[in-house]
Image (cartoon, rainbow, N blue to C red):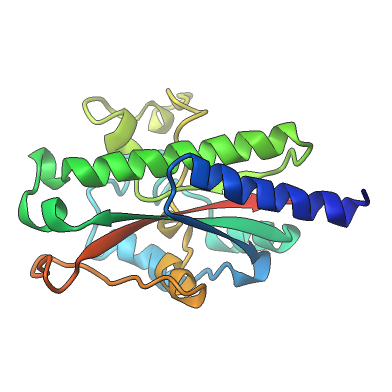
Length: 208
């Protein structure tokens, strides 16, 4: 098996792994399909997200977008992940701190799947594999304490579980989802389950 055949086999294996982990869908995309836009990063600060400045994986601590662009240009492929979940609880029954339990569990599943695929790729010899998940890891792993990664000399408490979000790294995840054929519908404070029957969490693992 030559290198291209090995890579194609690996990419297909990571798609199967994502589905085995409970992810709704996964697709192989080219690195050139990753869209990075300053306006996405701006949405983290205007209106300001509660995790802005509170998490080491979120802006303003996330890497500069030109640096991320340069990194994406060095990869060839990515595994794009989508987890669909029912919007009923999210839109009608907000939990404590305004984050519904179902949304948190879906977000945690995405973080775990991204890390599992990244680890599998590393073990297969793709040592530069790099994962991005959905939303801030702050409420998943450090909801009751200050993020240790933003303290002087501090380190992340969960380096093998937490990953930066696609949006926090300037990736236009929603446009990317539409480009691969996923029916993604934005939801806001006035949305209803009747108009937005399902929501999505998105993740990405860059390979090679």
